[in-house]
Image 1 (cartoon, rainbow, N blue to C red):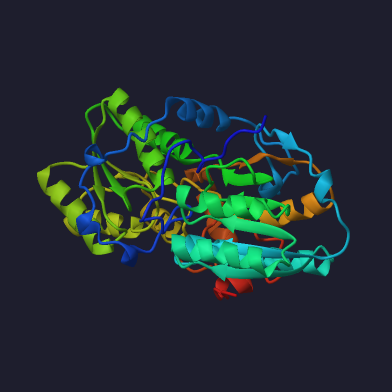
Image 2: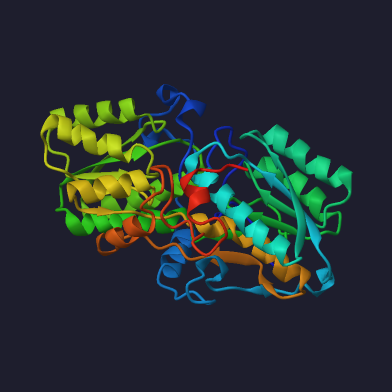
Length: 402
């Protein structure tokens, strides 16, 4: 029996603020002044003990798959047969994308297109027709229906804008009899051949909270900077961290920032005026540099801090020498849907839920990732996994958006 997919969890309806597809978002999309100041005001219970335990266990599982190719590795895979889709000759992929409205998605989109070139040269994919929903549920539903009505898609690739709203459209794509691959966020149906995603938000929350707890004392204050309410992968990050902070006796206060650097600086300045802030926790790396600069402006000691594998944070981390950790929501997952398509058309088994590794960058690894990404812009993600693809590094350095 195949399991029922949800957005890397089992909870979430249609969310109007779903501009995120991983770890970052565009601060212009939402007015942070309208967001609740504390997660205590949230009307949804985001903590899920079973999912917390599952993702906690997956953090220590050694992935199976080819060494040095994490985009093809799997964790606790339950394989599904795809012999019914086996076919020779180049195939047309139809990709319904939520958006490329933020640096995380842009980095992944560039990588995906370079992977496409490899598969085109190999005669696996003839073309990938893509429609960009620009962060709109209604637009993405129309995009999927357009592909269905067009009638010449050999495979549907879908990165959903939101969960429940996209489910019926995904099911209509499945009803065509063509394979459907969903990645990043999921949908509330088991009809796709595979659902591809990193371990998830609870794993991020555990990694980051445990790091802060290990480097702080009971009673120390942590300021949690959160970009958006109501997005499941973000809410799960905070739900896990909040639980662990409470258990460890860490005083944690959280604020929604919309990833606005000015708002972040104001929050940190106000908290520093109240007393010592020993730690900074972030549910995404946007604005990490602004948070650090707020300590510099106040003449305060640098905090223990978790950011993300965005280059701006890694560079500031190295410059300041602060005690830090860069959690990762594996950007290389953008390669995997096309590689899954290759396997599906070859009739090879694929995981029904393709869980990819998700490993933070530690202090011992910062120099390594800074060197590997030396010419990349600040909005680039260090663990993008495209070093072996054509156009590296120039295409990513120049931010060539197809």
